[in-house]
Length: 239
Image (cartoon, rainbow, N blue to C red; front, side, top):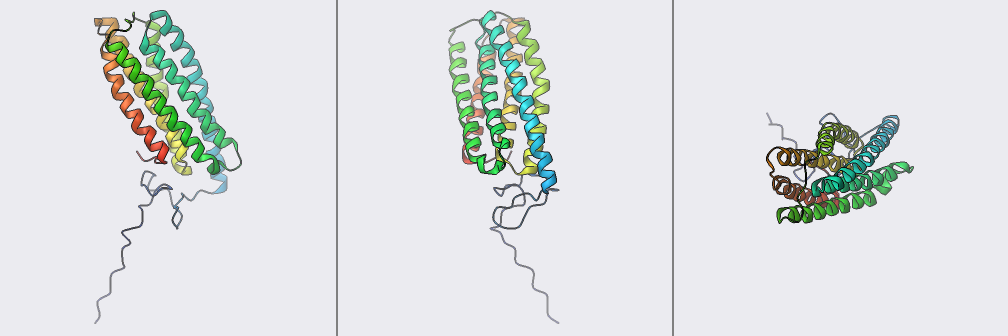
């Protein structure tokens, strides 16, 4: 009696998941055979997901425009470098979301993905550079911010809104196998972290006069932005 030979295991094959071979997609999402391993999505479902991404991007742009205006005005009134930086981060968010909107406005979004990813990556780097400079300036006493109730409310609202937008876009992007949509959702998630840092800094400054708290944590956020920017530039979108 012969013993059945076990089937050979291809250890070189990438794990089932997203287009670049990572396993960040859900286990329920089937993937096509072959080197690209793109998620298998019907044309009808793909049209629904493309429309969903466009709507989420439009919502992100609209909210960030409002957020930028409020933050920049409140930051100028309170002489708050943190609030002004948060407002400029919202402007960068708009640039990132606009790149994804441009990508999905065409008949073949995948053909525009690389360019959209580069825009997102550059926006991450710009955000990291600005936050680092402003954080160091604040630490060395370049400006002393006065308490801002408007800033505290804005940061709290953003802390509630941004995770929802980020999660919804990431789910749609993963199902589509779109690296740019997932990368933009990370940009939105990073804005959530910044909202938390801003809220903490403004509250501590308001209650205890600890003006150093915000810039210290902002430097950590800047490091995260650099990491995410490198991933977007290289086309990685696992998380």
